[in-house]
Amino acid sequence: MKSATILGRLESAAVGQRGLITTTQAQREGVERVQLKRLEGAAVIARVRRGVYALPSAEPSALLEVRAAWLHLDPTRFAEERLFDDQKIVISHTSAANVHGLGVMIPNRHEFTTNYRKQSTQDDIQIRRGAFGDDDTAIVEGMLVTSITRTVSDLARSRIEFGYLADVVSDALSRPEIRVTDVVRVLDRWAERYEFSSGGAMLEACRAHAGEVHDQAEQLARLSPSAREQLSKQISAAIAPTVQLQVQKILDAQLAGRTPQLSVQSALENTTRHQQKLVRDALQVASAGLTIPAGVATPPVLPKGLSEALGKVWESNSTNLAIAKSMEATTRQISSPVIPQDGDSATANDGTDRAVENEDELRRHSE
Image (cartoon, rainbow, N blue to C red; front, side, top):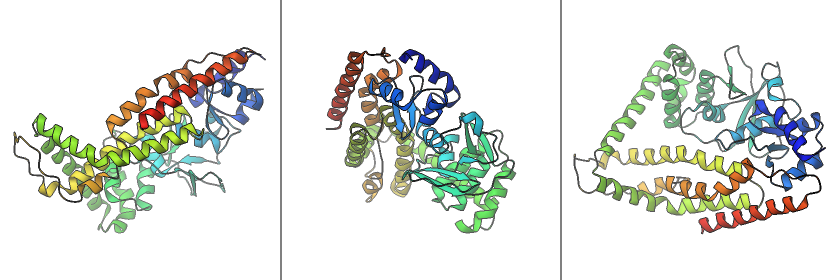
């Protein structure tokens, strides 16, 4: 079977999975492991994680990694075969919040809840067991995910830091399909864990948190352009060591073959939201000493301890941009590959050489 025919068959099968396919699913379509390996070696497809490949139609996105993990947990069945099954593997907790676009959390591991016994040996996957009501799951981007209200409940139950939960609740309330009474009912179950008397009181505290963030944004907006630039430089200097360390870790993993190019770009995409949350929190801590009169020419001195808080930041926007630019050629190679013909080893070798060149460029950006 010619490589173009194989690729066409795989693409047709993976339409509902946004261009991802598992090794076992490929075998159901008559494509063997050795054929997948040949396409991978020619840089036509990319290995996202063990047993899961990205086809040329797959695009970098913040959901690529969690989708690959979800497919990995039930590699034989296609996504559409799993969505309405009684045995469910559901994206949940911080992973679900990320899928729904709630808050700014980036999960350390992909989190799932199942209603039957299920285990995984993968270090980046966490599985909980739980039951699901009729309104507890939703289909988002072709994946089975806990509903917004169930996600809020799961996060509150797991006692995540209140600021993160408040962000999730605030974003949830902005969705037209979410009723305030439903959120209050959910929060009422876990209010005591956060030392609130009721779900209503907890909801008001979440709204107050969102209001404080808005007030501070207005305060910072009053800085003159020169003052804003100076403040930006102070923040950049504070986070620089952490930025360099995190970028180096990402690139080392990619160059060692543990993280494909598409996954790296998705990780960089995710870090921007997390950075914004951490910088905002750091500035909020300093807000008592951050009185900014209108038209002030110079920024205030950052309070002691702010640099340490900013040290938690994973990435800066400028670093994201630099790395993303350096990866354009590599991503384009995967998105628009040269499909090798049977016996065409020169094409495969040429693809490998281009990948090495791109990897060298990535490492130079990290130095």
